[in-house]
Image 1 (spheres, rainbow, N blue to C red):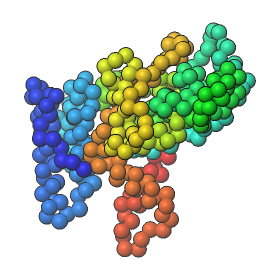
Image 2 (image 1 turned 90 degrees about the horizontal axis):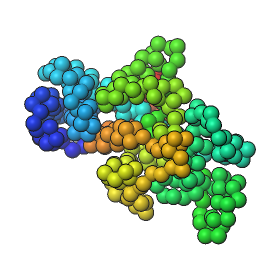
Image 3 (image 1 turned 90 degrees about the vertical axis):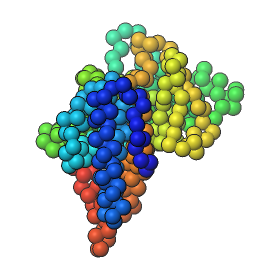
Image 4 (image 1 turned 135 degrees about the vertical axis):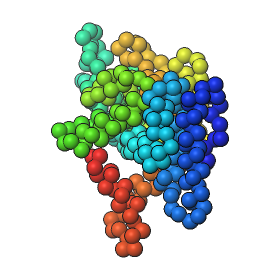
Amino acid sequence: MPALPPTLESCRDQPSVLSAYNLCLRLEEKIQREIDSGKNMKREMMYCRILGYLFHHLPAPAVKGNFVDEVTAIGSNDEKLLELGMHFYEHFIKPFMSNKGCPPTPPSRRTFFKVLDKPTGFGPPTNHDTAKKHALIRDGFKCVVTKMYDGTATWRQSELRRVIEGGEVPTLETRCTHILPQSIVENITSDSSKSSYTTAVWKALNSFGDPSLRKLLDGTNIHRIQNVMTMDPTVDGRFNTLKIWFVPTGETNSYRLEAIDEFWLTGRPRYVTFSTPNANRYPLPSATYLAIHATCAKVAHLSGTREYLETILTYMDDTHVLSEDGGSSELLHEAILRIASI
C-alpha cells in the first residue's frame, strides 16, 4: 500500500483540514518507525491510511464537516485515531466488501407485464425481486456497462426477442446490483449487538455529510431504484469487490469507469451514460450513492484494505482448521468480527 501523500492539495487553503490531515501523517511516520524496528503493525498502518486517504477521497463538503471535526477532536491521541480508522474499516469498507448480491432470478412474465402496464399508484420496490424488475425496465433489459441483454427477460418479450434473434445478439442472466449494500440494513434486529453494528455503519456513512441517507435507505428503502443497477454477473462481481467504480465526467448522467488496475476493465466500455424511459417512475442511479461507493473503493485500494480483506475472506471460505502455532490468529479475529455482524 502506498504511503500517504505528503500534502493535501485540494485543501491547502483550509488550515483546520490540513492540521487534521497532518495528525495522520505524523501517526503514519510513527508506525513506520515501529515496523522498521521489527514490530508487526501492518493492521495499525492500514487503519491509519484509511483515515488519511479519506481526506483525499471524501466529497469536498464531507471533508469540511463531521469527519474533520472528529479527527481534530481526537488530536494526538494515537490510540483513538487508530480506533477511528478501525471504525471505518469495520463499518464502511467491510460492508461493501461483504456485499455478495443475489444470484439471477428468472422474472415472471405475468409480473413483468403487470409492472410495465401499471398506469398509476405504482409503488417503489420493496425487495430484491421487485428492484430487479424495475431496474431491468429502466435499463432497457440489459447491463448498464456491457449492454448485454438479460436472456430470461427478453426471451419472454416478442419484440425484444426479434431484435436479439435478428442481430444474433448474445444474452446472459443479469444481476440486480445494489450500489450501497443490503448488509447496512439487514442487521437491524432486536439483538443489541447487531443493532449497534448497524448504528455504527450509519455513523460512518453520515461522514459524507448527508443526514438524509438513512431515512432514504433504511429498511426496504435499500431496494429503491436509485440504489440498484442491472449488471452482467462479471461486472457485478468486480463492482461488489471494489475493483471497479464510477466517476462522473461532468456530462449529464455520464460516468467514466475506473479500476484498481486496467486489467479489470479489459474489453469493457470506459464510459457509461445512464438513461431511463420515465424519470419519475424509474429514476436513474443516484450520483450520491455512486460517489460513496467510489470513495470506498479508492480508499480500500490505496490503504491496502481491499487486498487484505479479499485475502482474509477467501482464506476463511477455504480454511476449516486453524493452525496450532497461532498463525491463524488474524483469521480467527476476522472470523469473530464477521460472525458478530451477521
